[in-house]
Length: 245
Image (cartoon, rainbow, N blue to C red; front, side, top):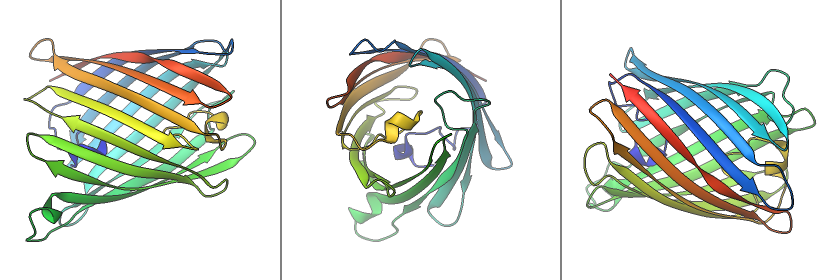
């Protein structure tokens, strides 16, 4: 699997479970956002299966979100993932989402192009008052020293909103992983509520670090800041523990 996908590592043969907690503060007297997240990953039949449950408190309301993903090789130098989610009786989340992505490595004798991987993602989200489509073409280029750079464009065709996201990942050694990211435009990469897809100028920066605590336990910390111009700012982070076997 492409490291630059920023998703679960589909090549890992280790099963694992994770628990995470996120806390974000808002400006303009908007209540804090809190999320508890539980996930499990298992590799079967040459594919990687991911299941997740999130309890999200946002805008002073609470939703429970169930989601799943399947990662699989497709053809030569290509792999893909299929993802879905649903929320029973949502107050701000989408009722359901459905989508996926395809990643294709470029096979060529040119040393630079051989490090390039193209991607195309699509997601449909069904909210109580609207239906939203999100397209995400992009590419990843693998660099020396276990670095890779991912550039993606996020497009909401219905509103014309679009944004550019950049992320630089680094694995200095096994089980250590760091990243920095930033985006600018009129949409967000991971909408969790209908207001997220409103066409508003948005700026985001963030970063994170994953590191081992023991042979079987990994810790992860991250920080993100988001400014939705003339609406609100959002700032906070996530802590996460993963047990693998």
